[in-house]
Each structure stands twice: as structure tokens, then as C-alpha cells.
Image (cartoon, rainbow, N blue to C red):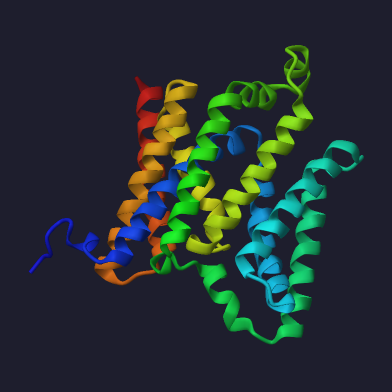
Length: 272
């Protein structure tokens, strides 16, 4: 017999997971709209993979892995942004070097600890084990993201189009990009705990990319991405509960379905 529609939300751990997803998925999608516009997908991927090293540092030093994960993500993001702004190398080369260094350091630290099992929750995520405190952190981070984008979204969009044009309008591009990058690093680091380092980039890109294909304006793109992220998050969580599949994978696959639907809508509009 099919369970009632909302029976899956009755367990307390599912309620906490749903709240965390409803906070983090829309926040990721909102940031993802600018990640796509500014072509920062590789940057966000580098931040996600730095999670491996951040956790390893925590295990070696005996500190909280989540705290060192966030701290190391911020360090990598800040270093990449500042070096990219002052160095002579192309952005993708700079990001690639920092990504390689981060992974190499992480592997070296793992070989020292010999505790590979401790990394599994951060590689694949475990949103069903979320605590009340983590839900609160997710909610505060979601508020911070939307407040930041509400205050600086137009300037970010202008900087994404042209740094020269943005500077001509009085935008402090380097400071704005640094603030965005650091906030993105914190968001990615926290989301890694629930979705996993292997799939967190998809949380940023897939809803935003799906919306971009179907939306007819910048604001429609933004809010459609947020809506798709919320829907995909709950749909994936439901699928995980109902059919015992990996939660992160189910959420991303739900987003891929929305991406395919967005592509069809976009083609239909072009054909009109």
C-alpha cells in the first residue's frame, strides 16, 4: 500500500533534513545564477574538492572537521581570487593549480591519518543525519545569501558582464568578487556536509542552468532557479526515503529532470 503523501515527513530526522535542504538548495541556486554568468563553475568545483583537505586537517589536528573544512575553503577561495586578480596566468590555470595543490595536500594528510572512513560523509554527504544546530546554521546562511544578493545582486550582474563597465559605474569589482567568493566558499563547505563534495557543484549549477534555458528575464531566471532547487531538494529527499537511494544523488537527478524540461521549454519558445 502506498504511504500517505506526507508520511515521509513524520520522522524528526526527515523534518530536519527537509528544512536543511529548503535552506541550502535555494541558496545554492541563487548563488549559482551568478556562478554561471561569471563562468565560475570550475572555481566552485575547486572549493568543493578542497573539502577533502579541510576534513583531513581537522582529523590530523584533532579539531572539528566541519570547522577546518569551512576555514580551508575560505582560505582557498580567497587565495584564488586574490592571485587571479594580481597574477599573469589565466583564471582557469590559477584555479587548476590551487585545485591540484589542495587535492595533493589532502591525499598526503589522509596517508598520515589512515582514517579513510572518516571522509565518507563528506564525499557522499549525509543530510539525514543533520542536527538541529546544523539546521539553524543552514537557515542563517540562507538568510545571509539572500541579503547579500539583494544588496549587491545588480552590481554582481554588471561585473559579470564587464569589469570595465562596472568600474565605470563605481563598482569596486575586486572587493565585490572577494566577498562573493568567500560567501560561496562557506556555502559550499556547509553544503558538502549534507550533499557531499562529489555532487555539491551540481547544487549550484543544475537549477540555475535549468532556469536559464526557460526564463525570459534576469529576475525570472533567479526566482525560477530558486523554485527548481526547492522542488528538486524535496523530490530527491522523498525519493531517498521511499526507495532507499542516496539522497544527494536523488536531489541532483531530480534537478537534471528539471534541466531537461527547461531545455524543452527553451526550444519550444525558439520555435514559436
